[in-house]
Amino acid sequence: MSTVDGNLIQELRERGLIAQMTGEDELEAYLAEGPRTLYCGFDPTADSLHLGHLVPLLVLTRFQNAGHNPIALVGGATGLIGDPSFKAAERQLNTPDIVAGWADRIRNQVSQFIKFEGVDNPARVVNNLEWAGEMNVLDFLRDVGKHFSINNMINKESVQQRLQREGSGISFTEFSYALLQGMDFAELNRRYDCTLQVGGSDQWGNIVGGIDLARRQNKAQTFGLTVPLITKADGTKFGKTESGAVWLDPQKTSPYSFYQFWLGTADADVYKFLHYFTFLSVEEIAKIQAEDAEAEGRPQAQGVLAREATRLVHGEEGLAAAQRITEAMFSGSLAELGESDLEQLAQDGLPSSELMTESLIDKPLTGLLSECGMAKASREVKDALGRNAVLINGDAVSMDDNMRTAECFAPERALFGRFFLVKLGKKKNHLFELKS
RNA sequence: GCAGGGGUUCCCGAGUGGCCAAAGGGAUCAGACUGUAAAUCUGACGCGAAAGCUUCGGUGGUUCGAAUCCACCCCCCUGCACCA
Image 1 (tube, rainbow, N blue to C red):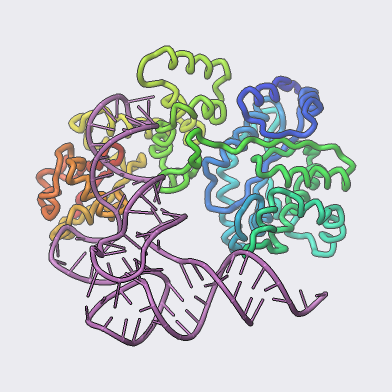
Image 2: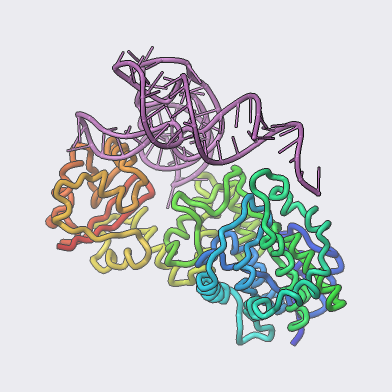
């Protein structure tokens, strides 16, 4: 079967998902003709992908849904080198075994978002170490290097700040990154007739390099498309929380935190993000926006976004867990939580820790609560205590209780004899379980 | 190498002998108001429950007393030179 959705590019445009593309109309017509093969690369620079990777990843999914064949490339080779694009300083190299370990995990993550069977246009995952790892230097210099012009590379905006900046510079290693990525495209073009590369807008230079190489080596015409860098209306960096990046790995960012992250989206950004991070149609999103504009008070958009995005990344179960905790923490009363509910909360991703009864003696609350990660410094706990902003099982404690930790966490005051739910401020919750 | 400028608490940035744990702004956290929003206002913001303790590139020194003065060292920036 070879039917494709000819409106794909038009839809991506409407969603604001296209930053740049080669041959505008030409590419659109080319994609409308039939199934094409495209790829997007993900370098293993950490043991998990984060929110910034999600947009291009979902674009891959969108292409597959429209009938095309996506390839997710894991950069086992490029990850060993480090992409200098728009980076201020040279990066620290990671050891080959670390990168290989990360590459495995990223391969798994990426695989969640594309379908490998049960469809006419199955996806593929490849690792560029397969071909780059075997290449020898002389072949590289003769077959690849010869096609790249130093003059052009130096003029690229993506490396300019590194070249101009005094005291930073760029090593030959990172400078060569673009050639490796170019090789990937040319190789995938030969192997799988891959003719389109998508990526973040910072990848434009590298993508164009690949297009050139594919033309010179394979006499093939290929295309490139980039998605915009995600920005927030207030100018702060997207995808960060107090505790750092929002990861896709549930071990690193729990579905609950993930869900909460989206719930906190600013009104000014939420409709844009619905276009980027969900598969709701443009019309559905417009309808939500219209309803929100109509209604007084709290918009529904954040809730929809949180629900859709969490389901995409963590599945129905992850979403259910996140909602369970949210419900318990922000609307339900503690009395409604059963013993098994409390047990479940920790498993569902609510931050939790164990308490040793003996260790509470002479331990100030400030110390305990900052050590368990509820606050960055005990100073913050102190401030909260002074404002009745710390609740233990629903009861406020104050600075006077600071040195009475053992009493506050006495077994007879625990829920079901062992649980304490501590709330600090409006948003931070932590579950303690007594162990003796 | 020479000359000049500089390194202050998360960031920017004041501070040139005591009144300095160090102005101001940003970021962050909490409170009020709210929609678990934004804006605004309030408070906190080196560590510590407190007593108190530890900071101003490093090491020594002068002094009753140093972020502030002196010596040496390290690093960054800007010119010039050297090397091409």
